[in-house]
Length: 138
Image 1 (cartoon, rainbow, N blue to C red):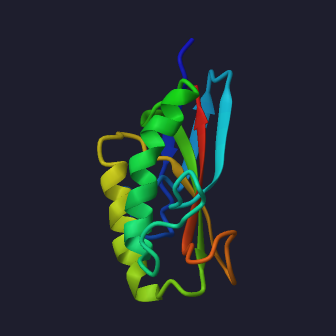
Image 2: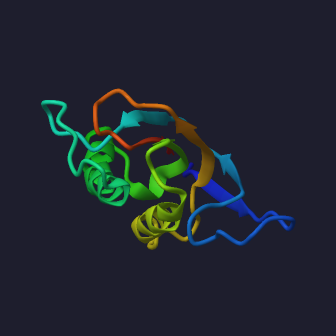
């Protein structure tokens, strides 16, 4: 039986449906895949686009379809996204970051839930401004 996803709006919150679902019911799934600590680094650990959280986000999202495919998943299987930003990411860049994420998810009829947006002092690599975690189910 195939995964069934049902999105649930939250009447007391703003409409972010282009970006995420407030609530998401999952039925008939047998596998859960977690991709965590995904940053804008190359294979050697060098962070790409230092100082630019939007470009780092775009770089990460370009890698995600391949990462998911290696595990047998696709973008449509993403059910949750966790966001972690450093304090160096200016709040006025949040809308641009979310626009990049919305563009990435534009083709998905049912958006994943958005997990917690954390703001931390630092991440694992120098110049790393953002890090994402993706949960996928099938």
